[in-house]
Image (tube, rainbow, N blue to C red):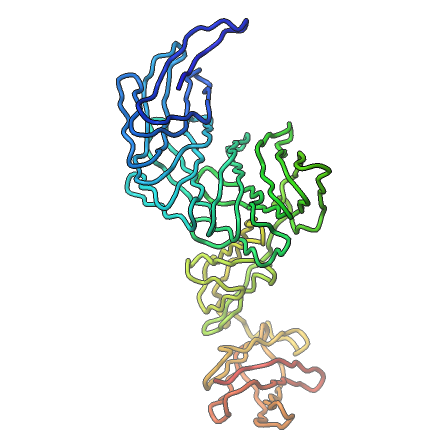
Length: 431
């Protein structure tokens, strides 16, 4: 392999040869803000880079070599492996951290991390510190032969990765796309585009299935930060967040596509609603809403749409949609003392809104009034057939009345609270 620098008029300033006895290949060159030059690719057997000798395993292995602007080799990095692997492309952020995209077969050991492929060949993405220490690595791929093509970094230090995959698509062994859902997908591979933050968290993923092969070979950003994607396709290619926005049809054996996307996650949000007051012994239900691909509450365990709790605190939920966009919202659950009323605060029944707790209950049901009832109230418990199971008249000097439901069979009941002029109806569960 030969690396060289030309001046503005095309004159050669320097050239360096690196390599060894095997078959060596460079795939990308990167020039940093400090004018350092890095090359990446794959090598076989061994690679002589200045004073460094890189040794490969049984197959071709990934390498990075770093030069000063004068051509001096100052450092190198490789990943010895028993199976084929190589870097496809590298980029760096403003802190000179490196992000390397490549392919690997079967397994790849990076320091103490072991990557396993789903099929014959998968994609790997990794972050290296300026001194070539591993920060994190991720895998992308499915049950077949998948390829990495391009990595690009925007002004927000977000990473965009493109490649070609077949069959299902996994990110770190989590399935994000099932090929059976897209019958128009072909056996030759089609485009995926993934967006990550610099911590390696997947922000979203898009797939563009088609009737024949398609792949994205270039990514660029305009002045507003919108990404542009360009590549090749044959036959028909579907695109759009829901794959219904459009279709491209090649006029020849292979055509070129170019797509511009605004941020598909920009308007994605979730609303847990206003903060909630919690009474002692009361259970409340927090509902994140339906239609999301995944849910995760801040206890790190709950992963359903609904979270039922009897504890105060701050509750946070993160949700994702079908392309991986993530939104987060929080709500405060505050414990309140139900007995904080003076006699001078007594109001009529029309001013209160009863709360029943605990609900479900296995016996005693508390009926809490936001304001103290000024008159006797009638409380009815009615079963699903309309029969009155309990009927009591109560008057209390506090804001809480109690009703004993222990004699009732388990089930859902209607509860009615009536005065001479008003009534309130709710539901209570006996278990």
